[in-house]
Length: 464
Image 1: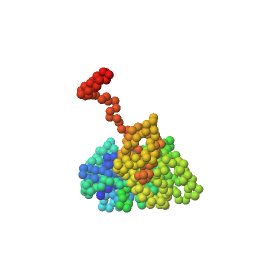
Image 2: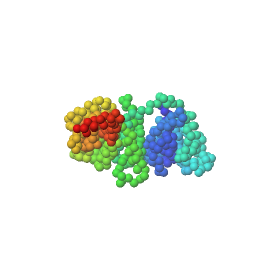
Image 3: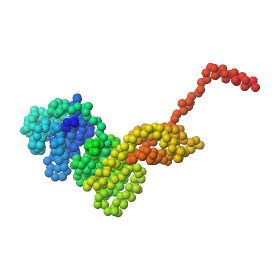
Image 4: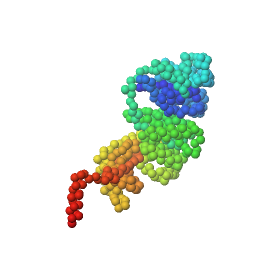
């Protein structure tokens, strides 16, 4: 198991910037805005032959009410589970009462775990003068760095990695299991559903739209099957998005869809099926990912309200009749346990492999049942079919005049392929390729013997 390094500190001291630097990524959202990070975010890094896991946490603001209390609980939970703690402070702001409160709790909670005080944002500052204030925290010598420019980070990691145990990289498994993205509009219960599936309060939930701002990757294991749950920010209509941070959050959510194997599309039963829900489902379809529809907050609805929601599903989402549908209450756990069996079934369909002879026989059977139409008096000929990709399953059909196959016949092929191959919960793509005539545009050049023979025959023809 790779050692875990937790980054803690006040809001806006540069934890997410250092996280990106240590993981050599841009996974964490970064902006000059306190409190941007709310959930624990995990990332992997490596220096030489030493690998580690970094945990970015929400800022410890010291507030005693609202969402800050929940964020603080997440941060202290990360401290308990980590092997090493990096306590970040801000050289620009100097020593603050909040830093002293955090240091006091760290001294009591960390115990024998290694802890390093990191002095960030040292650009343009006299390091000796700034360091002197932070010695008062009693956490040893502050390590000066600039997370933005990378100054001092290498020296910091040398100190950190000396205190961490050795890890054999060959024993580390790279397989992340089934990647499941949970998407939907703001405040439909995505984070609550994620916590319920994990069986613990792993991400921050609060009765406020936009609580989740970043895409959080959460690996776990259930019944010997590995999963990675991806909690995403709520996606509103473009016209309602004003803040730059929200725009980046939405980009991260859309990237999570591309990165997933299966997408859980969460909708709010109390608000009904909206146009934005249909738009999001369309994006998932375009990405070709496995899709499971979840109507959340189902408990407590009257029979009339339930009938109305089911009717809206039939009217607004007729183009995804292949996707399984679950009615759940993430808050109370109703219907959540059944999701894992559906996820595995959809994943198997997304990643299924089929032999070319089997697919070609299926193509022949489909043409016997319903022949391709005539085009300009010539019948379209479909000769053989093979698989061209997974997640989504792509089937490539070779033949003549395939560019003229009408949409109606393409839909017939897709529906038959899904039915005969028992593909469940995944879009199916069919691509056509026409065989090129290798002699098209080429003139057959006669050999000298053929030329002589032709001349001899022409003499007999002229003689008559």
